[in-house]
Image (tube, rainbow, N blue to C red; front, top):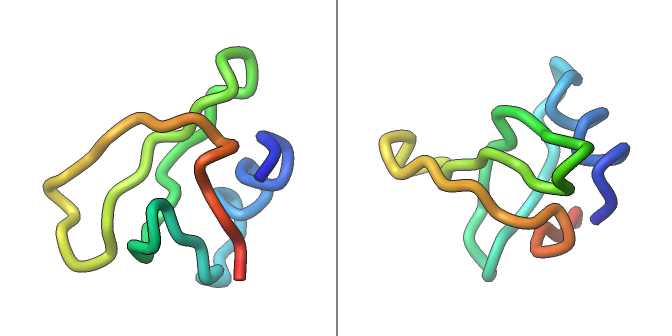
Length: 59
């Protein structure tokens, strides 16, 4: 996924089906300059991590 799409998903009130390594995640924020996203698995909100936007897949 590219960073503009990740930013649009993060800003949307509608939950999108996004995965990272086959795990459904929520995109908290996007750093378009760095090309990264702060995410967490839907079932583990305490497991925040920063990943490259290219690691995310929209279904």
